[in-house]
Length: 364
Ligand SMILES: NC(=O)c1ccc[n+]([C@@H]2O[C@H](COP(=O)([O-])OP(=O)(O)OC[C@H]3O[C@@H](n4cnc5c(N)ncnc54)[C@H](O)[C@@H]3O)[C@@H](O)[C@H]2O)c1
Image 1 (cartoon, helix red, strand yellow):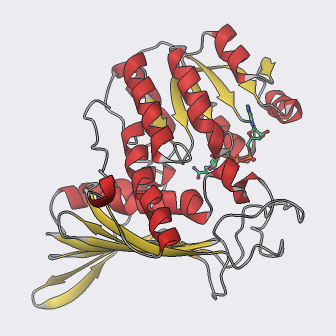
Image 2: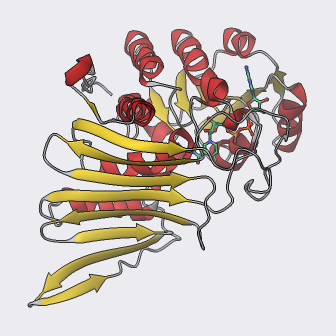
């Protein structure tokens, strides 16, 4: 690969920034760690010390104006993703933006427009596309081995998994929504991505908010604020019809009275089906008039695809991205319509009511 070192900066020095972005970009030879920014300077200082980053900022505009960066990670609360990503793009900086790309599809579309204007790249932090299981499944499905896909199921249900009751996650203004935009965005994306991102026809569903009164259903390790705002859904259930005739149903919850947490997708095709349940991948089919299950043995020591290396390679070589901004718009288009359907208690169609689907552009 090209030996050039890319100047890297991080915006939003919270828990995801450290666990995911810093730990991974830190190990890449083509990355030079330059600066870190958080409006809460203590958060930025803590990570700067721990990861030996020289320059610390509390204002992202100042950092982007001064540092001549090649790329940044945007790991702030959701409502800032569009504003910061667009500012960075217009400064000529590539952006690895956390999911959801924005709080709604309109804002996400503005990111795509700024990206096209700047000629830079935006990758969405859709890490579930980059697991060995997902990479293998994508290849398997693209080979046509499932036949025609007619239905999929996606879910991520937690018993006690509110990411901090009363924090920015449970406030519509800062998060854009609740569990649907937080966990749903990952698994809805994964199912639809594996299905080839078909054009949606209609969406219907319901949201519930039954656990807003308590911090006891917080996710382990997440602090809540009993006096903070909780005005988003803790559960989201729905059904999507696709123009190609296939369908998808989903269930997402931060808190629910179930025995065990579960993260899953199942994809049903005419020649085979696949399930990825709590990380376990299985293929279900029929051989010699007998139903068979296949368990692919993927070596965890061999990473088929690395999200961070992939972004760096794409910046250096111009190769297409596996999780481009346009895909972030696609999922948010569906999530917007889902919220509309849940609120109105009736299905929302993509062409009726002028809800025309924003077609994906081809220049990722
Ligand atoms: N891909 C994943 O699996 C995954 C997992 C967790 C979170 N996330 C996403 O990452 C983002 C951050 O989540 P988190 O859990 O780290 O939240 P967090 O609250 O731990 O961190 C957010 C940080 O952003 C900082 N911030 C707020 N306003 C800022 C501004 N104007 N400029 C600079 N910094 C600012 C906050 O002070 C805080 O330190 C969210 O969009 C979330 O959806 C993704």
